[in-house]
Image 1 (cartoon, helix red, strand yellow):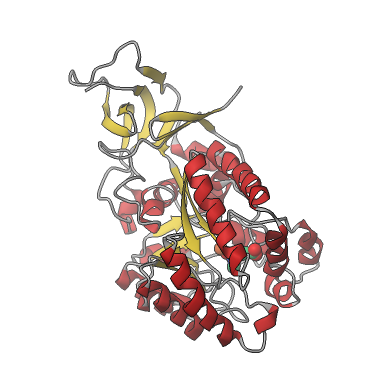
Image 2 (image 1 turned 30 degrees about the vertical axis):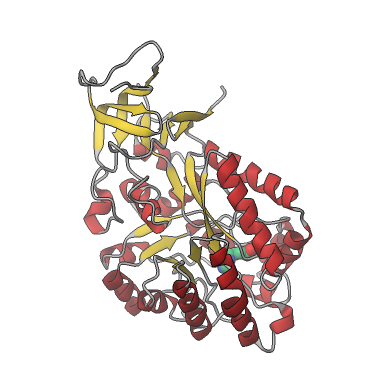
Length: 421
Ligand code: NIG
Ligand code: FE
């Protein structure tokens, strides 16, 4: 078979070879490293992964692009499985309040926070949102990200804005090299109009919005911000059960700030992921392990909320829960697109090993989006989404933090990003 692109003599080829499912416990550290590795692609697919030279049945001719992997570390394309990509405006005006100690939930309760982004998103045109989100995707791609999840949630009761966000994500999925998976999240804040009767808003989400989003096929998943002063456990349960009936996968912003029992609810409803989990209980973590719910950990948000509290990642792993790691990129609680920085936070602050971290942003990130059969590892037949790092090994990428170590990004077999120095 003809190779269209080959990367040879790779110092550290990190394959993540293994079962196409979220990895737990010691399997989180089994990342399938090949030294002096070689990988061959044909079009969008991987056709060979091994050590040394190519076997005779893989044909290299004058049209084949051949790249050197000397001094390089090669991994599967990174997957950012929790972002609020499409939104208007920015909230740097909250920094001064944050520095004075005003909390995220207090800013939200006073009508700021998510509510100010709702206003900016409503006012932005489709094209403005598209161009802003495209700029973020370009940055993400430069950091090695090849698949991104994108939530709505800045329209809340203004359904046309929710739809506008999802349509922007759909168009970007078509136009941009990065693949985008959409999540419907109108249940992101209680609109001021429904402050005194939030259940009325919950009814609208269930009866009017979810059926329409499902019918238009605009979202694969549904998510709820289950938090004190936002959506209660019972309201979150009702919304997610309705989404399930309409064929959507379920996600939950669970126990981000207050220990409400979000982890337990995610287990009860068989959510694909429970995200944040900073305040998750021991019981909730155990129940997630029993049900195979993936913990999507977002250390950049803990860092930026300045509470000093991070998800208990080591405990979560010890209990047998699979972990993913994401940026949570959004204008309020984590304004950064830089997944490499978040990976360093996961290691340096949450005490994850570099092996656990890379698994969490590749095969486990893929599983967090239901894409584990297609992406997340470098194996024959999988989609050729690959990052070439200008780094001698994985530890270097995580340890030498805050720096972009990406040399090239390959998406569906094509070089889509190259560092220009
Ligand atoms: O995951 N917690 C709710 N949603 C986001 C923040 C969104 C925002 O502040 O705009 C989060 O932290
Ligand atoms: Fe979030």
